[in-house]
Length: 292
Image 1 (cartoon, rainbow, N blue to C red):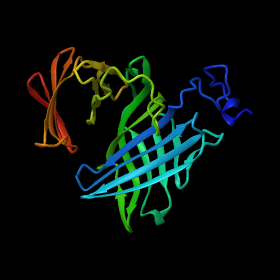
Image 2: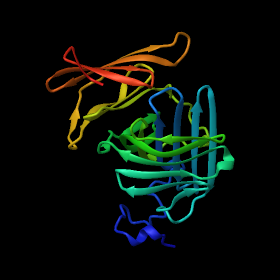
Image 3: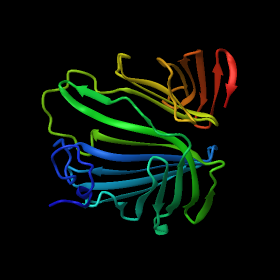
Image 4: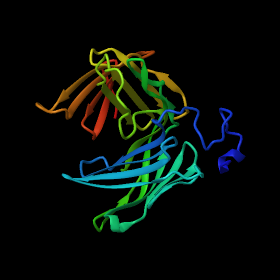
């Protein structure tokens, strides 16, 4: 049976949009968002996902307030109307594609609820293809775009309500789809002939005049299978920033980063990012201070 999206000229393969081209159980289509008020008081992450070959849709939201974490989860059978991004009390409304979205979790009885509007500060940027193989099998084969922006609305946790002001509330989001390990593991085959672990560095930053997105994915031996650094200007220009060189300082005995120095390259010379935890960054351009 056709689905509502089949009425639109969107098809990429000779299939109804009820189906995806791949029969891989790990096919997915997902959104991720984070939001914080530039302090360590509140930090929200949330997301919505569709898994066509599993027939499932789900969503989550997790808020850290001080040392306490509160989370809600939603899951249901996947319906036919993909334009209705909704599961349980959670939904995403597209106000203006690639620019403005509204996220709602409207069941206060869960302890965590919100009505938040996202506004992209700059155009979203395409990342290079995400591909990772273990042996002969691709366990990751996806595309993704990323964006930085601001939030406005309300956020409530355990009866306490916070006004979310775009002057102080910022965040990042990404949209990705393709194949990525989902849920239960597949049946075992030949033992993997390589270590499946990886080092993942993802640094999206928002400044007044531009955004920077750095993404590095390395195998255990340091070989990079994903390597990109771009600057997005207010007029939509995308500038490549060379091969990122990264030096991260961790809290002793942990994997918690405290400070990072990321060396990039512009057409006019070096550009260095210094990042302290989640709360801020500043830039040195050619050895001189460039802004924050």
